[in-house]
Length: 465
Image 1: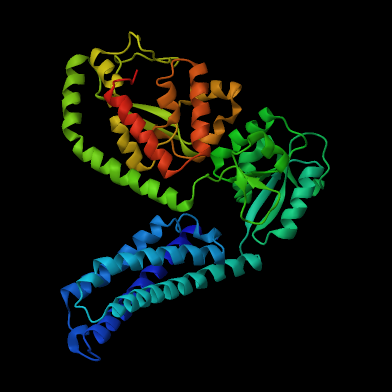
Image 2: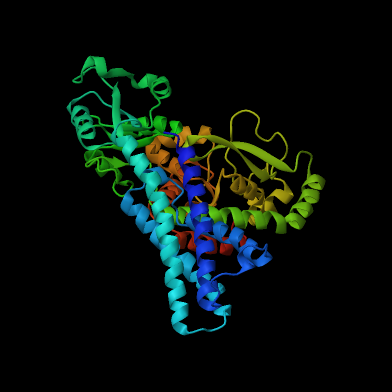
């Protein structure tokens, strides 16, 4: 299925529904409040009427976005569609009630309550019905197998056979495309074997794979994460069996697709509405910060240029969400060409750091240009600090669970940097990773706020190094 097509369809239906509701609600207010059954007001262009007809649908769309509905609407069940729509329309109705209705001439207080109920009823009914039409189409197409989620099973033993059989019996969305062999003890039908794990990239691309189920026979932790580290870069959903879940207690949650006992490792332990609000504030805060910090940027641009030769900004490749590389932006704090061949970790007394660079690092001013990375979507304001591939390869040897960080955007600050600070050794990086895993499993807007407050304290106390 074309997910973008249906996302656009949901958005258009929500806009049209909101427009229809506002027209009907405006008629209701004129008839009940003004006693006008028919008048030319509705057919004559009016600035307030036209502006409200444009603004109301956009406001509705904004609230629906914050509700998290647009993150993965194609995966929503009828019940979840109803609940999300109910909460969003209730919020919209109450906001409109307090911003619009209180300015009306009082006909009766009962009219206020009727108006609120009418607006809520119209908005919920119209929005839910339009969404139900799209959701029913998606469910039906999956049911008749016009659409399907191509799935492969990594494993070739009895466990892999059992999982594949359960998926085929219980899931209307998934189709098992085949098996990936991991050893020579093959129990599955040979004609269903697509290849070995070394061929995983071509198998995923050729068969348009969207989900991978790891069903190994008594795997150890290192082997499990070796597979997960490779799979993350392909942006597929990764699931595995409960016995493996014990290795990652608390790091995964049960799937809502009804595939018990399969659990997912790629889902984020944060409600969709909080994910949407988190991204919204990332965009707003980073945009405002980049505007307000222009004088600071100009000041340190001059200081850096006077202090030493070289560019003002320093770009470096880091590994971000889904294990994909991106270019991080910082103020240059070291002398030019300080790191030519093998990457070197910096320390508090590093001779490569310039005099201005020490000030920048002490108050973490060198990180401010990364608001641009946040605005672009490479990073979030709160999230694990991104590392270079060179160091990730070393970390994975000691802590193979580093790949868990790939399911969220890296950030400007997180629990790890607050507790450990700048990491000048692989041991400190691993220690910081453990704090980041704790953050990952306890992600919430409240914890993000706590981290931001602690970060501000560190900045003002000059504990950046």
